[in-house]
Amino acid sequence: MTEILTVAGLDDERLDWVRRLYGQADPKYRERPYLEHLFRRNPVGPSLHAFAVDGDRPVGHCCVVRTPALLGASALAAGKLEALWIEESHRGRSAGGETVVRRLLDTLYDFSDANDVELVHALATPRIGKVIAFEPLHPVGERSLVGAVAGTSVPTRALALVQRAAREAAAVPLRGVSLRAAAGSDEDLVAVDRVDEGRWAIVARGAWDWYRESPHVRVLVVGTSRALVQLPASPHEPLRLAGWRSRAPGTRSALRLLAAAGRVARAHGAATLRFQPWAPHDDALARACRLAGMIPRDDLTTVWVHTRDPALADARAAVSTPFLYLGF
Picture 1 (cartoon, rainbow, N blue to C red):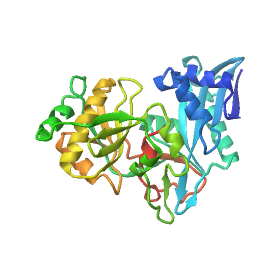
Picture 2 (cartoon, rainbow, N blue to C red; picture 1 turned 60 degrees about the vertical axis):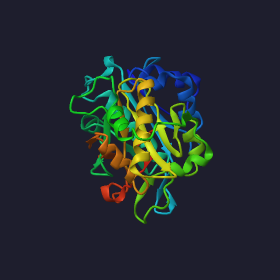
Picture 3 (cartoon, rainbow, N blue to C red; picture 1 turned 180 degrees about the vertical axis):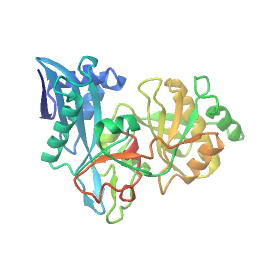
Picture 4 (cartoon, rainbow, N blue to C red; picture 1 turned 30 degrees about the horizontal axis):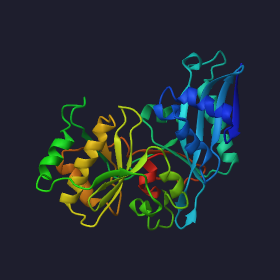
C-alpha cells in the first residue's frame, strides 16, 4: 500500500530520499551542498514536501520551495514547484483507477494551501503541465534567446555563438575576465525596482544572500561588465545569463560579455547559452544576442500557477523577472 507523507523541512533521512529520487533526473540533486542550500538555508521558510512511500521505501516526491514575491508593494506568500519524481514501478494507474502521482500532487497542493502559500509557480513543458494540473499563463515576458556553444552537438540552424560574438567583438580583445562568487552588492544585477498594483513578481528582495550562495550561481566579470550566471549541472543544461550591468552598456560591451560567457559555457560542458530578457536593464544584451545568432525560443513564456485567487492566474498579472526563470 502506497501512502503519502507530508513534511515541512527535511531531516537527514528525508534529504537523502530526495537525493536518491530526484537525483535520477537532475544531477544537482545528487550534490549535498546544493540540497543543504536549497532545503535548509532558505530564509523565506521551510520547503513543503510530499513523499509517496511504499512500506519503508520512498517511491515518489514533489515539493514547494518558498520564494520571495511581491503583489504590488506587499509581500506575497509564494513557492516554486520542484523535484517531481515517481519511480517507474509506481507509474500508471492503480487497481482503483487513481495514479500515485495524482494522489501525491493533490496532497501536496492541499498541504501548501494549509500552510498559507498563496501562489505556486512552475516552468514546465505542456506534457508536465498537464500532469501538475496548474493554470497555464501565456505569454509571460519575452522569448528567451538560445545560442550554440562551439564544439557541441546542437541543431544545425543554431549559429555558433562564440564564433559569431568573437567576430563582432574582435576589435577589442577580451581582458579582465573572471568568474567569482556573487557578493551582496551584486543584487543590483537582478533588482526589481517596483511592481505595479495588482501584479505579482518573484524577486530576490530579502533573500539575495541565500540566492547568491547557491553552488551554481556566479558573477561573470568582463572588464567593466558584470552578469549573473547559473552554471550547468549537466551537459544538457545551458549556461544561463541573468541580469547584466556595464559602465559602458552598449552592443560592443554586451558582445564581449557573450564571448566570455561562451568560453565559460564550453569550460563547464554546456551545450548552449541562454538569456531570458527582462525589463528594464537588458536591451543592449538582447540586441547582442540576436547579432550573435542566438535563436528565439518560446518554451519559457508559459508560466504555470496554482492559486485560489483568480486575479493571480492571469498572464497580465505576472511580471517577468530573473528569479521567475533561474531557479536556485
